[in-house]
Amino acid sequence: MHPDWIIPDWPAPPNVHACMTTRAGGVSLAPFDSFNPASHVEDDAAAVTENRRILRQWLPAEPLWLNQVHGVAVAEQAAGCGSVDAVLTSPQAAACDLISLPTADASISFAPNQVRVVLTADCLPVLFCDEAGSVVAAAHAGWRGLAAGVLEETVRAMKVQPERIIAWMGPAIGPSAFEVGPEVREIFVAQHPLAGIAFRPALPGTLDCAPHKWLADIYMLARISLARVGVERVYGGGWCTFSDKSRFYSYRRDGKTGRMASLIWRDEG
Image (cartoon, rainbow, N blue to C red; front, side, top):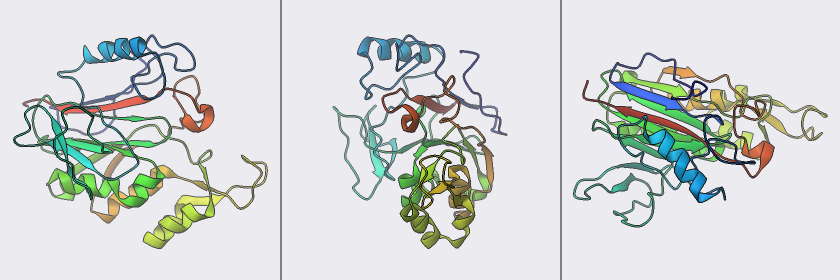
């Protein structure tokens, strides 16, 4: 495993394994340099395939790649679908699809050696497990997914008591760089008055010289969302993908760029 990749610092049980890739360790050329495992960002297909091959050698199985759409659907191994994963917890629940990837922004596994993954480049990746190591999950949470409840849906899909769940937040855009309009703040405050503390005014000259904008703390918003459903043991946070160009991809900073992969799986224990 590349030494620059991130191993979560959290009290997960010994049979739970997780990591997050960075820009380092792959073969992609600029602007995707160098470890881009995302196949949907116009990177060279051969480079993406090689990057995934490099990643796969550290994993017990091929990850369940998702078609992420900033929604709340959670993919899970479905009975009767063989090795195909179906979207089970979605307002538009899908059947098994032998051709396309599951359209979902989170996935869970109750079985050993099934790797769950989300791809991000400013949005917040959140990895989950329970204290017994019986279930793992990965969620992709941009502000739209957070507001819609993707973290809450993931917790519900895990089917364990929330107080038994441990969560880790990987690198995302930091609170000094995540500029949003007033309508975004209004959405969150309408859901929970406490969300107001996750926003501060973007002063003229801070980013785009627009005093009507706000700077949002996506890590705090995620903690508030998780606390609402009883998950208090939350770790990680503190990075800024926008500010650290040498280590992280950032869609907001660069536009055309790669993605980091956040992965989790469990063994028999």
